[in-house]
Amino acid sequence: EDAASTMRPILHYTARNTWLNDPNGLVWHDGLYHLFYQNNPFDNVWGNMSWGHATSTDLLHWTEHPVAIACDEEEDVFSGSIVVDHGNTSGFGTEEDPALVAIYTSAFKEGSTHQGTQAQSLAFSTDGGMTWSKYAGNPVLGRGSAHFRDPKVFRYEGSAGACWVMVAVEAQHQQVVMYRSANLKDWEYLSTFGPANSSEGEWECPDLFPLPVDGNPENVKWVLVVNVNPGAVAGGSGGQYFVGHFDGVQFTADPDSLVSPDADGSTDLRQCLWLDWGRDYYAAVSFSNTPDNRRIMIGWMNNWDYANSLPTAPWRSGMSLAREVELATVEGLPRLVQRPVLPLVLPLDSGVPKSTFQDVELHDSVLELPDAMPGSALLIEAEILPGSVRSIAFRLLCAPDGSAATVLSFDPVTSQLTLDRRTSGNTAFHEKFASAESAPVKLDGGVLRLRIIVDQSVEVFAQDGRVVLSDLVFPLPGSLGTDLRVEGGTATILKLVVSSLS
Ligand code: FRU
Image (tube, rainbow, N blue to C red; front, side):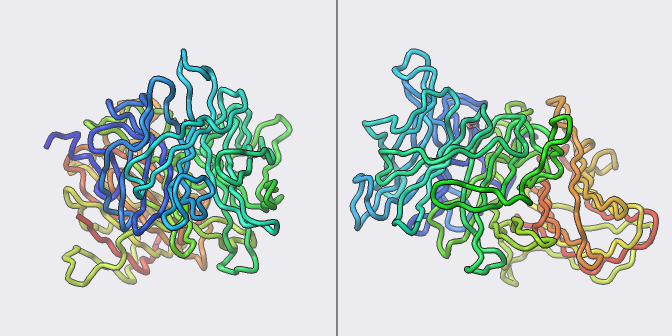
C-alpha cells in the first residue's frame, strides 16, 4: 500500500474512492442505519453534488452502495434529510409499507428553469432506501432565495395533532426558517430564528430535536443545532447549538443559551455553546426514526478552510464517529453531553490488546504507553488527578525519532484542555491546517476524565462528553508511539486503559 492509502481511518466512514462532505438523510429503517452524504461520484474534490449512500447495523461497519440521488442537468443535490412516512401522508408509499422520503436542496444550475435559486425538493424510495425517484412536482418549497437550503424535517406531535416540521436556513442572513406540512408537498411558513451567537459566517445544516433533561420525561427541552462556516470557535467550520423551547411554531432560546455581543458588536465565541471545540466536526445532524428515541449524530470530519486539500487518495475526507447525545444538568444548566458509539463491549477472547494502569503516581516523568498498531485505532480511557502539576500531556502518534507527535495536554491552572497538531506530521498541504485548539474543562472532584480515539484523527471526549475536541491528523508513516508526560509536580493516574482495535 502506498503512503496515502495507509492513512485511511478504520473506525471512521470514508467513501471508497470519491469525495464526500455533509452527512445527509440520516435515518434508521428496518434494522439498518442509512448514511447518505454529499458526494462527488466522479472525483475526490467538491462538485457534481449527489447523495452517496452507505448502511450499517452498528454504526461502525459500513457498506457503501451506489449513488442514491444524483445531480442532473437542472440541479445539484445539496444537503437534506429523510423521514419514514409512516402514515403515508405523501402518498408515495402505503400505510403498510411506508415510503422513505428525502427532502433535499435543489441547487439549480445556470440555464435551468429556476436558475439562481436554491429550493427544497423531494425524492422517495419504496425499497427501503436503496433506489430513489425524484418527485415530478419539484421543487416543493422556494423563497426566491439563492441561499435557502439544508432542510431537516421531523414529525411534530402537538396538542392540535401531528404534522411535519422543517427547519432550513437562509444561509447568508444567519437565520433558521421553519415551515410545516401535512403531506411533505405543501408547506406553510412558521417562523424565523436568528441571527444569534456565532453569526459572522453562513448558517448551514440546522437540526431541531427534543431531549429529556437528565432523562426526566417531565422536563423536555429542545435543542437547535446551527452549523456555521466560518465562525466556529476554533476557526472555519463548526457546530453551535441552543437549548430552549419549541411550541410547534417558534423556537425560543433559553436566556442562558444566548451570548450578548460586546460593546464593539463582536461576540465572544468561547461563551457560545459548541458541539465540538476542535477544527473537524461540521454539518452535524441527527438520525431520524431511531429505536428507543436515541438521539445519534454524525458530523463531517473536516473544515471548509482546507477541505479540498487533504492529502489522501483516492478518497478524500470522512465522517466522525456516531455520537449519542443527551441533555444533562451541567453547572446548573441543561447542556449536551456526547458519547461516541464504540465497540465497547468486547468479548474477552476478542484478542484486542489492552493495557491497564491503576494508581500510578507520576512525578516529572514519562509513562510509556503501548504503541498504536499499524492499521488499528487506539482507544485511551483515562482518569487522572492532575493536582497542581504545570502540565500533563498525552503524546500521540509519535515519530520514532521524537520529531513529531500530536499533543493533548491539560493545564490545571487555566483549566484548559489543548489539542495541538502543529507537529503532528504532514501539515504543509494547507497553510490553515497546523493549529492548536483549546477548550475549558471543569474537573469533577479534581478528576480529569478523558476518552480519546486515535484513528487518523484525534477525538477527545472529556468529563463524560461534556466537552468534545476533534481534529484530523496526518502522521508520517511509522508514527505510532504513545506516552504520557507530567511536568512540574506529581499527578496520579487513577485509571488508564489503552486498547487497540484493528
Ligand atoms: C455545508 C454545505 C451545505 C450545502 C452543502 C453543499 O457543508 O455548504 O450548506 O447544502 O454543503 O455540498
